[in-house]
Image (cartoon, rainbow, N blue to C red; front, side, top):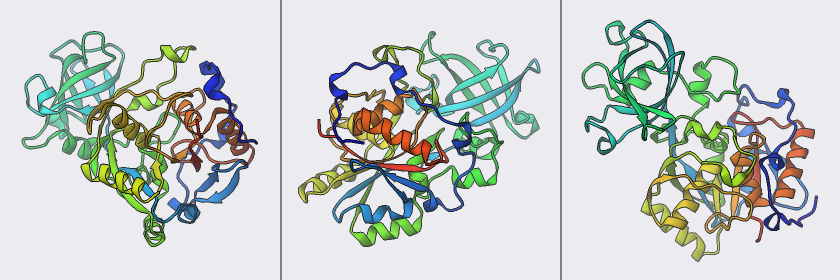
Length: 368
Protein backbone atom coordinates (compact mmCIF):
# COMPACT_ATOMS: atom_id res chain seq x y z
CA UNK A 1 0.00 0.00 0.00
CA UNK A 2 1.36 3.42 -0.90
CA UNK A 3 0.36 6.95 -0.01
CA UNK A 4 0.14 8.01 -3.67
CA UNK A 5 -3.43 8.69 -4.72
CA UNK A 6 -4.75 10.12 -7.96
CA UNK A 7 -8.47 9.87 -7.18
CA UNK A 8 -9.10 13.62 -7.43
CA UNK A 9 -7.96 13.55 -11.05
CA UNK A 10 -10.05 10.59 -12.28
CA UNK A 11 -13.69 9.98 -13.04
CA UNK A 12 -15.62 7.37 -11.08
CA UNK A 13 -18.69 5.22 -11.57
CA UNK A 14 -20.66 3.44 -8.86
CA UNK A 15 -19.01 0.16 -9.86
CA UNK A 16 -15.63 1.53 -8.77
CA UNK A 17 -16.80 1.33 -5.16
CA UNK A 18 -17.75 -2.34 -5.29
CA UNK A 19 -15.87 -5.07 -3.44
CA UNK A 20 -16.41 -8.73 -2.64
CA UNK A 21 -17.63 -9.31 0.90
CA UNK A 22 -18.24 -12.81 2.29
CA UNK A 23 -21.64 -12.90 3.98
CA UNK A 24 -20.01 -14.43 7.05
CA UNK A 25 -18.28 -11.09 7.73
CA UNK A 26 -21.55 -9.17 8.14
CA UNK A 27 -21.86 -8.77 11.91
CA UNK A 28 -25.24 -9.90 13.22
CA UNK A 29 -24.53 -9.05 16.85
CA UNK A 30 -22.21 -6.58 18.60
CA UNK A 31 -18.93 -7.54 20.21
CA UNK A 32 -19.20 -8.71 23.81
CA UNK A 33 -17.79 -5.35 24.95
CA UNK A 34 -18.12 -2.11 23.01
CA UNK A 35 -14.43 -1.22 23.06
CA UNK A 36 -13.32 -4.81 22.36
CA UNK A 37 -14.12 -4.33 18.67
CA UNK A 38 -11.18 -4.31 16.31
CA UNK A 39 -9.79 -1.04 14.96
CA UNK A 40 -8.01 -0.92 11.61
CA UNK A 41 -5.54 1.95 11.83
CA UNK A 42 -5.34 3.33 8.31
CA UNK A 43 -3.68 6.63 9.13
CA UNK A 44 -0.31 5.54 7.75
CA UNK A 45 0.84 4.05 4.46
CA UNK A 46 0.44 0.51 5.84
CA UNK A 47 -2.54 -0.84 7.82
CA UNK A 48 -2.11 -1.65 11.49
CA UNK A 49 -4.47 -4.03 13.28
CA UNK A 50 -5.54 -2.76 16.70
CA UNK A 51 -8.31 -3.01 19.31
CA UNK A 52 -10.69 -0.07 19.67
CA UNK A 53 -9.76 0.63 23.29
CA UNK A 54 -6.30 1.62 21.98
CA UNK A 55 -7.85 4.71 20.35
CA UNK A 56 -6.95 7.27 23.09
CA UNK A 57 -3.25 6.54 22.58
CA UNK A 58 -3.60 7.23 18.84
CA UNK A 59 -4.91 10.76 19.46
CA UNK A 60 -3.01 13.76 20.76
CA UNK A 61 -3.70 16.07 23.71
CA UNK A 62 -5.62 19.01 22.32
CA UNK A 63 -7.40 17.03 19.62
CA UNK A 64 -11.19 17.46 19.51
CA UNK A 65 -13.51 14.48 19.16
CA UNK A 66 -16.92 15.40 17.74
CA UNK A 67 -19.74 12.93 18.36
CA UNK A 68 -23.26 12.65 16.96
CA UNK A 69 -25.56 12.59 20.01
CA UNK A 70 -28.69 11.49 18.17
CA UNK A 71 -30.80 8.81 19.84
CA UNK A 72 -32.27 5.91 17.86
CA UNK A 73 -36.03 5.71 18.29
CA UNK A 74 -38.16 2.57 18.06
CA UNK A 75 -39.31 3.55 14.60
CA UNK A 76 -40.52 0.19 13.24
CA UNK A 77 -44.20 -0.61 13.79
CA UNK A 78 -46.53 -3.37 12.69
CA UNK A 79 -50.27 -3.15 12.20
CA UNK A 80 -53.10 -3.34 9.72
CA UNK A 81 -55.39 -1.22 7.61
CA UNK A 82 -59.05 -0.84 8.47
CA UNK A 83 -59.68 -3.54 5.83
CA UNK A 84 -57.43 -5.97 7.71
CA UNK A 85 -54.47 -5.85 5.36
CA UNK A 86 -51.16 -6.20 7.19
CA UNK A 87 -48.59 -3.39 7.06
CA UNK A 88 -45.22 -2.29 8.37
CA UNK A 89 -44.42 1.32 9.18
CA UNK A 90 -40.95 2.84 9.53
CA UNK A 91 -41.23 6.35 10.93
CA UNK A 92 -38.49 8.45 9.33
CA UNK A 93 -39.03 11.68 11.26
CA UNK A 94 -41.42 13.50 13.56
CA UNK A 95 -42.47 16.76 11.93
CA UNK A 96 -42.05 20.00 13.81
CA UNK A 97 -45.37 21.79 14.52
CA UNK A 98 -44.65 24.39 11.83
CA UNK A 99 -44.09 21.57 9.30
CA UNK A 100 -47.37 19.83 10.07
CA UNK A 101 -50.59 20.47 8.18
CA UNK A 102 -52.51 21.18 11.38
CA UNK A 103 -49.69 22.35 13.66
CA UNK A 104 -50.51 19.55 16.09
CA UNK A 105 -47.04 18.11 16.56
CA UNK A 106 -48.55 14.66 16.00
CA UNK A 107 -47.56 14.30 12.35
CA UNK A 108 -44.78 12.01 11.15
CA UNK A 109 -43.18 11.02 7.88
CA UNK A 110 -42.81 7.31 7.25
CA UNK A 111 -42.05 4.48 4.86
CA UNK A 112 -44.98 2.07 4.47
CA UNK A 113 -44.74 -1.57 3.43
CA UNK A 114 -48.20 -2.74 2.45
CA UNK A 115 -49.82 -4.58 -0.46
CA UNK A 116 -51.94 -1.56 -1.45
CA UNK A 117 -51.40 2.01 -0.27
CA UNK A 118 -54.32 3.45 1.75
CA UNK A 119 -56.33 6.41 0.51
CA UNK A 120 -55.97 9.84 2.17
CA UNK A 121 -57.99 9.82 5.37
CA UNK A 122 -57.59 6.07 5.74
CA UNK A 123 -57.01 4.74 9.26
CA UNK A 124 -54.11 2.46 10.15
CA UNK A 125 -54.14 0.45 13.37
CA UNK A 126 -50.68 0.00 14.95
CA UNK A 127 -49.91 -2.47 17.74
CA UNK A 128 -53.58 -3.38 17.93
CA UNK A 129 -54.88 0.14 17.37
CA UNK A 130 -56.07 2.70 19.89
CA UNK A 131 -58.91 0.47 21.06
CA UNK A 132 -56.55 -2.47 21.46
CA UNK A 133 -53.96 -0.72 23.60
CA UNK A 134 -51.88 0.62 20.71
CA UNK A 135 -52.42 3.68 18.54
CA UNK A 136 -53.86 4.71 15.20
CA UNK A 137 -52.46 6.70 12.30
CA UNK A 138 -54.41 8.72 9.75
CA UNK A 139 -52.93 8.52 6.26
CA UNK A 140 -52.54 12.06 4.87
CA UNK A 141 -50.77 11.47 1.56
CA UNK A 142 -47.26 11.64 0.13
CA UNK A 143 -44.40 13.74 1.47
CA UNK A 144 -42.91 16.27 0.83
CA UNK A 145 -45.17 16.56 -2.25
CA UNK A 146 -47.30 14.37 -4.51
CA UNK A 147 -44.16 12.87 -6.08
CA UNK A 148 -42.52 12.15 -2.73
CA UNK A 149 -41.30 8.67 -1.84
CA UNK A 150 -42.41 8.97 1.81
CA UNK A 151 -45.81 9.38 3.42
CA UNK A 152 -47.32 11.81 5.91
CA UNK A 153 -49.43 10.48 8.81
CA UNK A 154 -51.04 11.89 11.93
CA UNK A 155 -50.68 9.68 14.99
CA UNK A 156 -53.61 9.28 17.37
CA UNK A 157 -52.89 7.75 20.76
CA UNK A 158 -53.98 8.20 24.37
CA UNK A 159 -54.23 11.83 25.43
CA UNK A 160 -50.89 13.42 26.13
CA UNK A 161 -48.77 10.83 24.30
CA UNK A 162 -46.68 12.43 21.58
CA UNK A 163 -45.08 10.46 18.69
CA UNK A 164 -41.88 9.82 20.64
CA UNK A 165 -43.83 8.38 23.57
CA UNK A 166 -45.90 6.20 21.24
CA UNK A 167 -42.78 4.92 19.49
CA UNK A 168 -41.02 4.14 22.77
CA UNK A 169 -44.05 2.25 24.06
CA UNK A 170 -45.04 0.25 20.97
CA UNK A 171 -42.18 0.26 18.48
CA UNK A 172 -39.30 -2.00 17.57
CA UNK A 173 -35.61 -1.16 17.15
CA UNK A 174 -35.17 -0.35 13.43
CA UNK A 175 -32.32 -2.75 12.74
CA UNK A 176 -30.69 -2.44 9.31
CA UNK A 177 -31.89 -4.73 6.53
CA UNK A 178 -28.72 -6.87 6.61
CA UNK A 179 -29.28 -7.84 10.27
CA UNK A 180 -31.55 -10.84 10.07
CA UNK A 181 -32.73 -11.44 13.64
CA UNK A 182 -35.77 -9.88 15.29
CA UNK A 183 -34.83 -7.04 17.62
CA UNK A 184 -34.40 -7.99 21.26
CA UNK A 185 -33.25 -6.56 24.60
CA UNK A 186 -29.59 -6.67 23.52
CA UNK A 187 -30.40 -4.51 20.49
CA UNK A 188 -32.28 -1.99 22.64
CA UNK A 189 -29.09 -1.50 24.64
CA UNK A 190 -26.35 -1.92 22.05
CA UNK A 191 -27.88 -0.30 18.94
CA UNK A 192 -27.56 2.95 20.85
CA UNK A 193 -24.53 5.01 21.85
CA UNK A 194 -23.70 5.59 25.51
CA UNK A 195 -24.13 9.35 24.97
CA UNK A 196 -27.37 9.33 22.93
CA UNK A 197 -29.34 12.40 23.97
CA UNK A 198 -31.66 13.74 21.24
CA UNK A 199 -34.29 11.28 19.94
CA UNK A 200 -34.91 11.18 16.21
CA UNK A 201 -32.66 8.69 14.37
CA UNK A 202 -33.84 5.52 12.64
CA UNK A 203 -30.28 4.21 12.31
CA UNK A 204 -27.41 4.41 14.76
CA UNK A 205 -24.28 6.52 14.19
CA UNK A 206 -22.41 3.24 14.24
CA UNK A 207 -18.81 4.43 14.66
CA UNK A 208 -19.84 5.78 18.06
CA UNK A 209 -21.15 2.39 19.24
CA UNK A 210 -17.58 1.36 20.16
CA UNK A 211 -17.18 4.02 22.84
CA UNK A 212 -17.74 3.01 26.45
CA UNK A 213 -17.07 4.75 29.74
CA UNK A 214 -13.55 3.32 29.96
CA UNK A 215 -12.57 4.78 26.60
CA UNK A 216 -14.16 8.13 27.44
CA UNK A 217 -12.24 8.33 30.72
CA UNK A 218 -9.00 7.44 28.91
CA UNK A 219 -9.66 10.19 26.36
CA UNK A 220 -10.19 12.72 29.15
CA UNK A 221 -7.00 11.61 30.84
CA UNK A 222 -5.15 11.94 27.54
CA UNK A 223 -6.32 15.54 27.20
CA UNK A 224 -8.57 14.93 24.19
CA UNK A 225 -11.50 17.34 24.15
CA UNK A 226 -15.08 16.41 23.26
CA UNK A 227 -17.99 18.16 21.54
CA UNK A 228 -21.22 17.07 19.89
CA UNK A 229 -23.51 17.66 16.94
CA UNK A 230 -26.89 16.14 16.16
CA UNK A 231 -27.79 14.50 12.87
CA UNK A 232 -30.86 12.27 12.85
CA UNK A 233 -29.76 9.39 10.67
CA UNK A 234 -32.45 8.39 8.18
CA UNK A 235 -33.24 5.08 6.50
CA UNK A 236 -31.87 6.59 3.29
CA UNK A 237 -28.40 5.78 4.60
CA UNK A 238 -29.10 2.15 3.55
CA UNK A 239 -30.65 3.05 0.18
CA UNK A 240 -28.76 1.47 -2.75
CA UNK A 241 -27.40 3.61 -5.54
CA UNK A 242 -29.82 3.28 -8.46
CA UNK A 243 -27.68 5.05 -11.06
CA UNK A 244 -24.31 4.09 -12.52
CA UNK A 245 -23.34 7.71 -12.95
CA UNK A 246 -22.53 9.14 -9.53
CA UNK A 247 -23.63 12.66 -10.45
CA UNK A 248 -27.17 11.42 -11.19
CA UNK A 249 -27.74 10.10 -7.67
CA UNK A 250 -30.22 12.04 -5.51
CA UNK A 251 -29.19 12.10 -1.86
CA UNK A 252 -31.65 11.74 1.00
CA UNK A 253 -32.22 14.61 3.44
CA UNK A 254 -31.33 14.42 7.13
CA UNK A 255 -32.01 16.93 9.89
CA UNK A 256 -29.02 18.32 11.79
CA UNK A 257 -28.09 20.85 14.48
CA UNK A 258 -24.76 22.19 15.73
CA UNK A 259 -24.58 23.88 19.15
CA UNK A 260 -22.68 27.20 19.28
CA UNK A 261 -20.47 25.59 21.93
CA UNK A 262 -19.27 23.09 19.33
CA UNK A 263 -18.40 25.87 16.91
CA UNK A 264 -16.35 27.51 19.67
CA UNK A 265 -14.68 24.19 20.50
CA UNK A 266 -13.61 23.82 16.86
CA UNK A 267 -12.24 27.37 16.84
CA UNK A 268 -10.31 26.68 20.05
CA UNK A 269 -9.00 23.39 18.64
CA UNK A 270 -7.64 25.15 15.57
CA UNK A 271 -6.04 27.86 17.72
CA UNK A 272 -4.07 25.32 19.78
CA UNK A 273 -3.02 23.30 16.72
CA UNK A 274 -5.25 20.31 17.46
CA UNK A 275 -7.07 18.08 15.01
CA UNK A 276 -10.83 17.78 14.55
CA UNK A 277 -11.68 14.08 14.79
CA UNK A 278 -15.14 13.17 13.50
CA UNK A 279 -16.77 10.12 15.04
CA UNK A 280 -18.66 8.70 12.08
CA UNK A 281 -19.71 9.80 8.62
CA UNK A 282 -22.82 11.48 10.04
CA UNK A 283 -20.60 13.88 11.97
CA UNK A 284 -18.58 14.53 8.81
CA UNK A 285 -21.72 15.32 6.84
CA UNK A 286 -22.93 17.67 9.58
CA UNK A 287 -19.69 19.61 9.97
CA UNK A 288 -18.97 19.90 6.27
CA UNK A 289 -22.56 21.01 5.58
CA UNK A 290 -22.16 23.79 8.12
CA UNK A 291 -18.81 24.77 6.59
CA UNK A 292 -20.53 25.30 3.25
CA UNK A 293 -23.86 26.84 4.12
CA UNK A 294 -23.05 28.56 7.43
CA UNK A 295 -26.27 27.21 8.97
CA UNK A 296 -26.18 25.76 12.47
CA UNK A 297 -29.36 23.77 11.91
CA UNK A 298 -31.52 22.58 9.05
CA UNK A 299 -31.63 19.72 6.55
CA UNK A 300 -28.64 18.45 4.63
CA UNK A 301 -28.39 16.39 1.46
CA UNK A 302 -24.64 16.86 1.08
CA UNK A 303 -23.08 14.26 -1.22
CA UNK A 304 -19.36 13.77 -0.64
CA UNK A 305 -17.42 12.06 -3.45
CA UNK A 306 -13.74 12.00 -4.48
CA UNK A 307 -12.51 15.49 -5.25
CA UNK A 308 -14.50 17.03 -2.38
CA UNK A 309 -12.57 19.68 -0.47
CA UNK A 310 -12.93 19.11 3.28
CA UNK A 311 -12.91 22.23 5.42
CA UNK A 312 -13.34 20.98 9.00
CA UNK A 313 -12.54 17.31 9.60
CA UNK A 314 -8.93 16.11 9.89
CA UNK A 315 -9.37 12.54 11.19
CA UNK A 316 -12.28 10.12 10.84
CA UNK A 317 -13.39 7.14 12.91
CA UNK A 318 -15.82 5.04 10.91
CA UNK A 319 -17.20 1.53 10.51
CA UNK A 320 -16.94 -0.50 7.29
CA UNK A 321 -19.60 0.39 4.73
CA UNK A 322 -21.70 -1.37 2.13
CA UNK A 323 -20.24 -1.92 -1.35
CA UNK A 324 -21.25 0.68 -3.96
CA UNK A 325 -22.67 2.97 -1.27
CA UNK A 326 -22.52 6.74 -0.85
CA UNK A 327 -20.55 6.19 2.36
CA UNK A 328 -17.86 4.26 0.49
CA UNK A 329 -17.59 7.35 -1.70
CA UNK A 330 -17.33 9.63 1.34
CA UNK A 331 -14.49 7.70 3.00
CA UNK A 332 -12.70 7.43 -0.37
CA UNK A 333 -12.98 11.19 -0.78
CA UNK A 334 -11.57 11.65 2.71
CA UNK A 335 -8.62 9.24 2.76
CA UNK A 336 -8.03 8.56 -0.95
CA UNK A 337 -9.69 6.00 -3.19
CA UNK A 338 -6.74 3.62 -3.70
CA UNK A 339 -5.85 3.78 -0.01
CA UNK A 340 -9.39 3.01 1.15
CA UNK A 341 -9.92 0.15 -1.30
CA UNK A 342 -6.61 -1.39 -0.18
CA UNK A 343 -7.72 -1.07 3.46
CA UNK A 344 -10.97 -2.84 2.62
CA UNK A 345 -9.07 -5.69 0.94
CA UNK A 346 -6.96 -5.98 4.07
CA UNK A 347 -10.05 -5.96 6.28
CA UNK A 348 -11.68 -8.77 4.30
CA UNK A 349 -8.49 -10.83 4.30
CA UNK A 350 -8.10 -10.37 8.07
CA UNK A 351 -11.78 -11.14 8.63
CA UNK A 352 -12.84 -7.86 10.20
CA UNK A 353 -16.55 -7.64 11.02
CA UNK A 354 -18.54 -5.35 8.74
CA UNK A 355 -21.39 -2.84 8.93
CA UNK A 356 -23.40 -1.55 11.90
CA UNK A 357 -22.36 -4.09 14.54
CA UNK A 358 -18.93 -4.54 12.99
CA UNK A 359 -15.45 -3.20 13.60
CA UNK A 360 -14.04 0.29 13.06
CA UNK A 361 -11.27 2.00 11.14
CA UNK A 362 -9.25 5.17 11.73
CA UNK A 363 -8.48 7.41 8.73
CA UNK A 364 -6.51 10.59 8.22
CA UNK A 365 -7.55 13.16 5.62
CA UNK A 366 -5.62 12.91 2.40
CA UNK A 367 -3.89 16.15 1.51
CA UNK A 368 -5.49 17.37 -1.71
